Length: 289
Image (cartoon, rainbow, N blue to C red; front, side, top):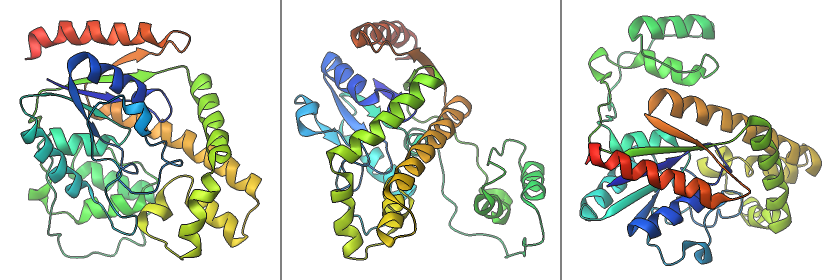
């Protein structure tokens, strides 16, 4: 049995994954793009050893921060674990939907692109219309100009629908937007209190500006603070804002790309949410497996 725990940042996925892993004697596989990196702990809300409760966890904390770990790399590593533990229950947990889709679906990576064309004179809206004309299922956001152009450059034969390869149950955790945003804001402040600045500063002092550090929320913003281009208060507010925006993008992906069953989290009694999820899993497995 494969279960995937998904949802926006800060909603309680880690706690749920450990509870289900203990219930079903499962291993846990990370599907968060930032939690693969070593030494990025506080800013990624990476699970602590004490929180694992003896459950085997994989694809956490194993890539050097200066390396560029790609979706294709993740697909290779996740599928190796799926094969290794094919006789065990497996729990995927994380907020990077593309990683999860790449692991469980027939998601292919084009190696060659068509001839380069100059798209500089086209607006984002025009590019999006061209993408939709090329493939009506294209769901790239209008503001993501780089991805729109990259999509247009792909050869027609490379656009392959992603079909499921592994039967899985997709569990989504959610809560009211105002509650989620408050939790995100509170978590950012907690990260600062726990030493996020001290986590980031050694990388800054070594002038490490890898993709992970320059794209990870909470890291680039503190680099700007250390550079003196903003105050600490401004950096913190930017982290909060970007975290909220990221949560919205996560919802969009999961709701349109994966067959997720959503559960409203009871934060006053999380065990009730666990019980609801377990009941759903046990009913679903009768039909799925």
